[in-house]
Each structure stands twice: as structure tokens, then as C-alpha cells.
Length: 585
Image (cartoon, rainbow, N blue to C red; front, top):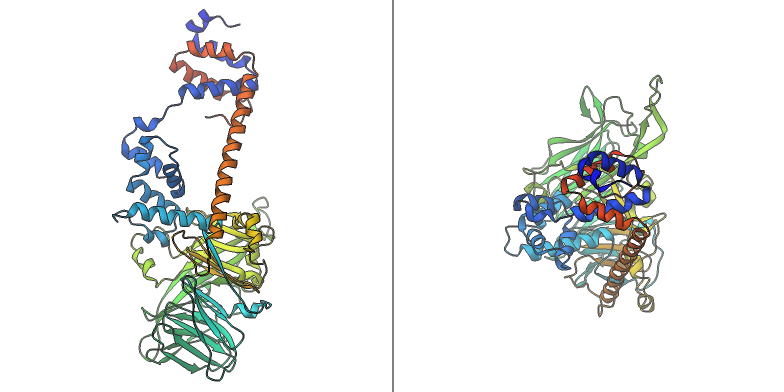
């Protein structure tokens, strides 16, 4: 046994000798004692600016939770309640395209922060605050063709009531109107905007109805419709591939224009009525260092957005933006493996690339073509006002590339059942997990995503939910999904399911708030379960610590060691490989 006299006279050697005599279990005990002795709340010792900088790394929902549950000291509560900390946290954890939702200079910023933060947390966990259903009068099979007859925009839904009628719904106000042609023609595709509904008929006409003014009109299409896009009262219809032909038509001016874009794969169309512009997202090949349009059947190395101004009788080419350009020696993207989905506000392009074989430097082909990495390129509408406001302060371009996305995105059968609710959040029906939320974490480009099973499935396991038939939409390839940061809409064979992530919004048909009460009770049960689990872990740790017969001796030793010497003891522990995990340092 080490004598106390020697311990006081030859501290370094004594500490090393003590460490060598400890077993792995003893190391756990001593590490806990040292941590308890050295542990202090450093916040009170730091300048307010530095403390605020540390606190700003917390997620906004953690800030809200710590404040609301009174889990922090008064000093910490003051820091977490400052607008600078909340603003910094918000900018870190929300995509730039949504940062306009919070303004720290607003006198009502605290309520705004609470509301937007709780909404974001409900969105990324798949745990809506309320739920309602617009049931079909007659149960019907939902097919891939039917998904083209459903459109969502900012809390509004347009969907088919049979093949010859389109119904317009508001998730808050309920049914608004129903539309059909004079000759009761069958519809092939539907689009919805903030002011109008557009539909293409099997006879080759495109009809536009403004549901705010009551104005309506139609025009004849030259050939089969491949794509339909609507923004306010302006419609764009793709009617050709070789070459790509886009026809635009304005309900107010009744003027039609034609855009021809030769020899490339058209991936998506962005339309802006306010700017009178049309942006075609298409493939490109890298020739002489500059992306050029490529043949439809040719693999490509880049993705470009070409913008046309819809002013005058003939559209004019304005400019082009390169969203993706592969390195010169990388394999090109195969045109038949690219899948695209999205809405009026964003475009998501899924593709795969072979991995480089780092071990075989002598191979003529360094690419392992049977091993691939999946990518998702998210391109935002370049003409939207909220994006323009941030252009000068943007840290990221309008396009963001992520790797390791969902495997299903390589199969176009699943693309109708995908909702890009935010630029960095995607809801989809997973093969293994059911309804799943993909949350692309903030950070630099090429970031990955976290995947979580939607928590609504656990809420609806509640017996009272089963009794009142608060059902979950069927998983499947042919249901339609759409949404934004407030609502998620799923259309299946039973009807239109609406989820709301904003607790202050009351849905149409929500009823007496049965779902809300079930959700609240399940949340309380989860909180109690976490508390019990934490208590059990604490009891196990105390029991494990108390099993050592040398506890009293080691406490006496530590009590005689000065603070600086304790730091030396910690360093001695760190310098030895004990193979122990979970130490505080």
C-alpha cells in the first residue's frame, strides 16, 4: 500500500503507481469520482457572448424543451432566452430557404420561434399535431395513372372525382369547388397553383380555372401531353421529346408561346408567372470544358438550368446555370438510371455513380461498376421571391447534392409516393420501415441523411385510436404524397389523408380533437418511460460503483490530493490504455 507520506512528497511517481494498481472496474469508479469533484458549471465563469456562442449549437427544439421544462439553471435560461442564441440556432438547423420564417427583430419573435420550432420537430419526427380524412364516396383502386390527377399546393388539394370531374379542397376550409368541361371530357393530368386549377383532357385540350376570380379558358394542344406545370394563371405543357417542345399559355392575356429545346433530357420545369420566365432543368455533356446540350439517348456529365423570358410573341433565351458538373475523369451518368420527382418549388434528381477502386491502382478501369453510391440533387425554384431575398446572404447555391439517399429513389415506381415537404425533408413509404422521414442534416454539400420511422404509427397503435378508426394510409407504390413544412397529404384508395404539423391550425373534419388527445397522452407516456429508464440506469451505475471494497480508501486518497494533482491523475489515466469506454474525458 502506498504510504501517505510518499504520496505527499513524490506526487507524480505515486500517481503512476496508483494507476498501475487499478483494475478496469476501479478505473470506472475513480473516473466517476474525479468527474464529480472537477465538475462545475462553467457558464457562470464565461463572458455572455462566449456562453451564447456555445448555446447556439443546440437544436432549436432542445432550446425550447430546456426552457419550457425548467431543466436548466437561471443563468442558462437567460442565455437560452436571448434572441441572438435562438436566431443562431435557427440558422444552423433550418435550411436557408426557410430562414425567412423567423425574424429576431420582430417584437413577437419568442412566440414565432416557439411555433416554428415545434412545427419543425413534428415534421422531422413524422408526428403531426392533428389529422383528418376526406373519404372517397366509393372505395376505388389507386393506380399510377390516378396519381397524375392529384396536385397539392400550400394547403390546397385538387383531385379527381371520377375521370370527368376535379374537386378542389382546402385542408382548413374543406371542399371549395368542382370542375368539369362542357362536354364532360376525361382528364389525364391536373396541376394546382395559388390561384388556379389546370387540367389536360384526353381529347387534347388544356383547361384553366381561376378559383378566386371565376375566370376560365382553354386551348388546343398539338400532341400528347407529357408534363403539366402551373404557376398562378400561367400554364406550361410539354408536348414533345425530339425535340423538346414546351407550350406556355396565360389565362389573363390568352397568349400562347412555344419553346423548343433540342437534343437533351428534360428533367424538370420551373415556371414563374411573376417574372415571366421558364427554367428548363436538363442534362448536359462536358465538351471543351463547358456544359453543352446532349442527345436524349446519350449519357451525360452535368445538369443545367436554361432560362427563357416569356415576353413578347417569341420567348428569348436568357441564361444558363450549371447545377452539377462531374469531374473530367468520372464516369458519366447513365440516362436510363436517372429518376426525378418534385413540385412547383423544387426538383429532386436521384442517380447513381460507380465507386472508385482505391486498392487497384494498376487497373485500366479504376471504377467498380458493381458497387455504386447513390446521390440526390435538390434544385430549388430560382425565381421564387423567398429564395431571391436570401441570394445575397446565401451560403449555399440553389442546388445541394446529398449522398446516401433512399435506395427506392432508383426505382421510378415509388416516385409518386414521395413528398418533398421541405428542401431537406422527404417523406416516403419505405420498404422496411413503412412511412419514413428522411432528414438531410445541415452542413456542407455532399451531406448524408438520417432516416426515422414516422412516429404517427406508434400514436395510432393506441386502443382508442383503433376504436374510432383513426387509420394510417395504406403503404403502396401508387398512393400520392405531397406537402410542405405545415401539411402532408396522402391520397390512397380510401380517400385524402391530411396531417398537420402546426399545432395552432385546426383541420377541416378534425372533429373533437380525439387524435390530439391521443397524441398528447402518448407523448406523456414516452416522457415517463424515458424518466424510468434514466432512473434504472442511475441505479445500476450506483450499484456497480458500490461493489468495490476499495471505495472508501480511494475517496480518502482523492481527498488528500490537491486540485492540480487531480488533473495530473487524470492525465495519468488518459495516458494508459485501459480499454474502457464512456469516460468523461
